[in-house]
Image (cartoon, rainbow, N blue to C red; front, side):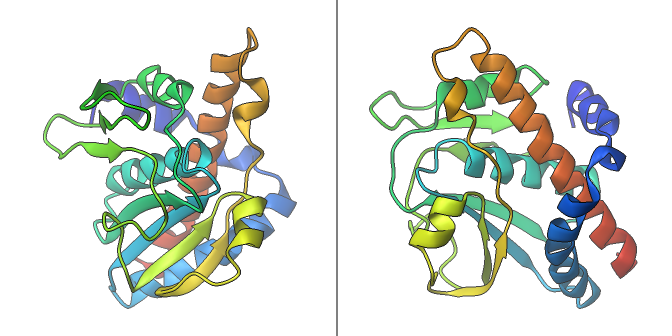
Length: 207
């Protein structure tokens, strides 16, 4: 893993997470702990409305942090209740902490890639529906990253479980001088929560 990303993850302070937030996150912890104890594969499909911001932050950090912690059984995906495009400031936020970022296609919904290490396959980024062929069809966890998607999808076909992992949308900063800073803050917030969830599950499961 690139040194800058390792340093960034190591700098995240999970003790700063509020007790109320930890209670919400512990539902996620409990599910992962049981799966890790059984040594079962874990497919996480992070879902929000547009698959443009929060779900991509979550997918990419989940894959990166699971690798950082040596949890090999986790695979991460993302999707939306509709497809739009990955918002550029999401990619810029990842680039700012050391990810290698590139573009594979240019259109209304471009395909980009990110790498957190030289010796790993790139993570492909493009906006898609949660049931897109790129994503698993069964035996996955539907992780809802926004309340709108949570309400719009009362039932996610093929999901073995459904977990709420919601965040405020950084979209409110779009077009302001603070845009990139706000996206970096959201990226850090999501990474911190995932580090807490994965670390706790690893500890409790003796993985």
